[in-house]
Length: 142
Image (cartoon, rainbow, N blue to C red):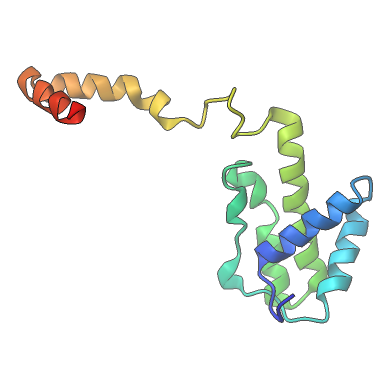
């Protein structure tokens, strides 16, 4: 591990620890995170994100613990950093159990095109004359 981990690195490590002991308590996980990372430097607040989870759980879930992580970084308190990581991990774990994954192919609520298609069609019909629409359709086909 590098001298200065990122929040994403710590989150991925927490996922590995959780996978190794799925029945372990979250407070034990928090203690393991603290003991593993406390000898290194604190993560940079500039990289306070876990972007790979944007498509797996809603942003409000995977970011739930980031304010606590930030407070821990600012106060140089590994307990707060680990607590924030565990909160985000818990939210990411619970989301699929409670409502199914966002990237589940049977759920298309994240498909913006589906939600706006009817409105787009109304706008195109209103503002794009038929002859221009025909030209646009021909260009798309070619």
